[in-house]
Image (tube, rainbow, N blue to C red; front, side, top):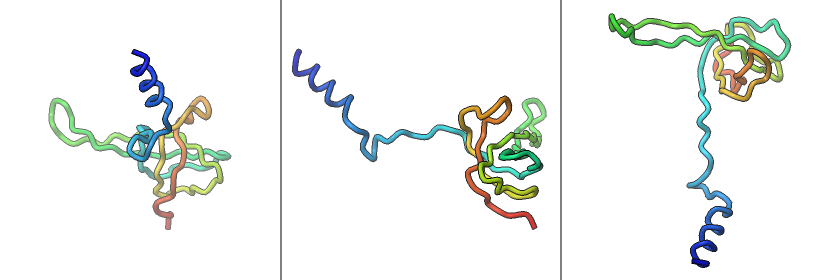
Length: 104
C-alpha cells in the first residue's frame, strides 16, 4: 500500500515531458481588421461559412471580434490571426497573434 502511494506521489509531481506538455485548446481565427481607432484595440471581422440546417445551402456569417492589440500594429484592411484569451475588458476576449497580410 505504501509503495502505491509513493508511486502516485512521484508520477503526479513530476514535471511534464515533451509528450505530456499542456495542450493549448484556445480557439484561433483569421479575419480582416475593420476598425482600429481605439488605443490597443482593433475590431476584426471573421467570416465563417456554415451549412444551413434546413436548406443545406452554404451561408456566410460575419462576427465582429474586439481584439487586444498591444503595440497598435494592426491597420484597417490587414488580414490577421487572433487567439482566444482571458477577458481584457467588457467586450475584448481575443488577442492579436500576428499580421498575416498588410493592406495595400
